[in-house]
Length: 429
Image 1 (cartoon, rainbow, N blue to C red):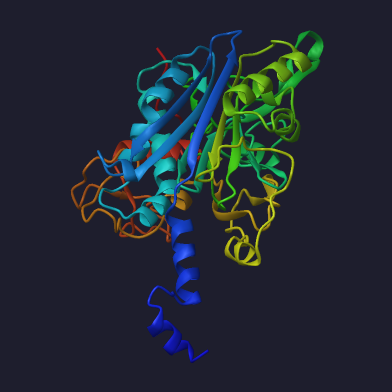
Image 2 (image 1 turned 180 degrees about the vertical axis):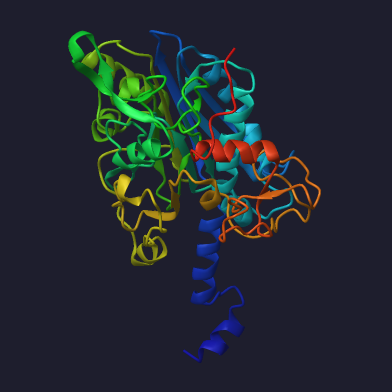
């Protein structure tokens, strides 16, 4: 037989097993999944809007850096905020990501950029003096990584191959979210039900003034800035089994549970799946609200089958080791969501739901840019113009004005208003 070295010399085409495993792991990491989507909607008030965009590029003009974006915007008190968010939120998020980042750095920058983009969208829309508002559930799919940001009660659900259904968002309804009720009242809002003749209270818990039943949204100029646009953000990485996302407005979720919505459309292509979810919601509850659904399939390379099919996928020992779930990151919103139970399928990369900008925008001087910029609106700042996101009153011993990130004066006023430190600066004509 000869030694291993002799056999290798006699047959130069032989490759060591370690090299094969390394090459296989590298190929699995490099191959991108196919993204397919479908949408369906039934309108009652004309205030639901959605975004589907699969031709985005991290590096402009380079198709190999492609990523996809999907969003649901459920407007209220008019459709202006939903339309504005659909048209501008993506650009504001991308504008908050420094140029020239490698892929891994770009993915890691997404949670912070999403916070900045949501707040800037709200700030720019409120400057127009319009009073409508909108929920926003915004999904970025880059390879196997899914990053979701949300305010309001439009939901994103993940149906993993061979795993249980998991929510990737948190509902910001005052009725159901005790932490958000405490935050709103601590910031100066009042929470209570609508009082009718005779003092009888009816309906869900609402924030006053304004009567909004959500604690986070974009817009809502007339409610008060303690209703914040700071999103809950979750980032996960799928294994090469792929997965299905169901993104929908509350017209779906008021009628169907996450599990029932996922189960109702398993085995169907994305377009048919979205239509069936809407049909099932209407069959259950009727058309009482705008009802919109976007289904996104993240499909492994060379796999043409629909996702979400019932039979669980079997994995080799090597794949099980490769895609073992990490412990979730520390998060103020960790108690609010169901843990992803797909051990061996989904890796949790990031989760945070705090409404405090100082906690969401990071610490230290902005190491990405080399110049001082406003962390929200991206305006250039002279060294003596920026106000630290950590800075408090001039009498506060905890002020750290030398630490970034920094805000311009206008965005600092916005931050203070959201935290209840001053009345809203926005006055509706």
